[in-house]
Amino acid sequence: MLTRRALVKNLILGGSTATLVTGMAGYSGLQQLLLGRPAFAASLKPLAVPPLLGGESRDGIRVYDLNLQKGTTQFYDGMNTPTLGINGSYLGPTLKMRAGDTVRLNVTNQLGQNSTLHWHGFHLPAYADGGPHQIIKDGATWSPQFEVKQRASMFWYHSHLPPVTGPQVYQGLAGLIYVDDEETGRLDLPSEYGVDDIPLMLQDRTFDDDGSLFYSGMMMGVMGDVMLVNGSLNPYFESKSQKLRLRILNGSNARFYSLGFSDERVFSQIGTDGGLLERPIDVSRISLAPGERAQVIVDLSDGRPVVLRAVSSGSGPVGSEQVFDVLRIQPDLERARVAPLPSRLVTLDQPDPAQAIGTRPFVLGMGMTINGKRMDRNRIDETVRLGSTEIWEISNTSMVPHPFHVHDVQFRILDRNGSPPALNEMGLKDTVVVNPAERVRVLLSFTDYSDPYLPYMYHCHNLEHEDTGMMGQFVVTA
Ligand SMILES: [Cu+2]
Image 1 (cartoon, rainbow, N blue to C red):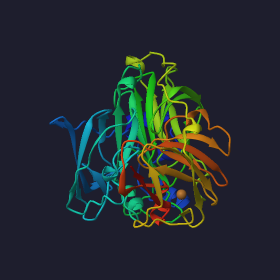
Image 2 (cartoon, protein in one colour; image 1 turned 135 degrees about the vertical axis):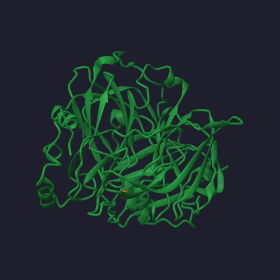
Image 3 (cartoon, rainbow, N blue to C red; image 1 turned 60 degrees about the horizontal axis):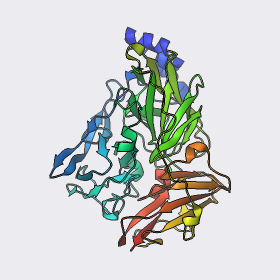
Image 4 (cartoon, rainbow, N blue to C red; image 1 turned 45 degrees about the vertical axis):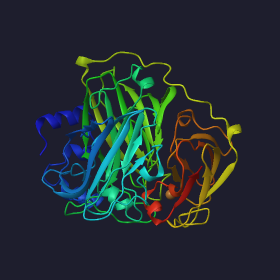
């Protein structure tokens, strides 16, 4: 049932008719008839914000204890859904780290099945990467340790064990990582976690009639018909700040999103996957493919409620066209923050293709292949020299776009089919969309870590493509 408060909020926020009448007799059956969805009530709920985990300092090392576990989550009132989580029933805590810290992550697997945990976007030794070669057997604990060499940004961690990456992430094995550094700390940006600095992990899901998550296993990519944001369904957020910072992750298995506000208002993008942009960029929409992140600042000083919407762009897999209400934002400006955005954020090097020792081609082809091959964990596909800078030229000869992700490095996009990338793609990236018939060149430097045997991965971040074999392995040698 909708409470009076929620109903009023819904009216104020301009909620869709569907949510407005949910809970009224007769509607559920109609909804099921029309949309083929389960007849569950889904009232508006406050946005879930994952708890922050700062770790414990032991002998100068910041230690985080993480338990991969099974659980039960109520996404719909009164409906128990079996899920997976980290230190909880669905998703995990947001790990707070600082650049320069040495961290150790004690990951204990209590899932009843093997898994891994990958630190997406992190520059680290191959043994600590958490990819397919760092299997954590059921009942075992894996304790990688490494220095945080990231710029301030939002990263994430998730299961990475083909062919079960897709289903494990779908059931909840993912979490966020906030990295701070000095340069960003000096900027006057909204940075109170959960108050004016809000993470949004977007995941589309399908629920079965019995309340369980329905994972179709479709090789082209598993797509859901409802949106979970940090695990919450139909969330709203009351903003105490005129300037709200949103750190958005497309944590979906396969859907691509074009994100914007219900009133088409202009907002500022301040960050990409691996760090802040040099200066804020005004946009009215941003695109995020699975694995990609963006940091944005939305101005709420007009006091009007607004809805963040995701249009599943249709550039994703066939049948992906759908509009999702991601978050209803209700400004509550009693304790408003008014500081203007800094016009200059951080300093980034100009990417210089002349530094590259060569160009390495990657062809994303039909049949979920890269350079004509599917993943073989016993085959090293590429060998890169430690200390070198390279251009990777990624072409897509298949019929669908693929988000190409490279482990160990943050890279820069040089061009798309010879043209410079959009302003908001000029920051640090670890995942880049390559559209059909497109050729994207990126510049990468391989520093600090080498291992002649243990590889890093490069792969499509559509998790079902990845699980089918759209992945390769490279080693960095001294
Ligand atoms: Cu793909």
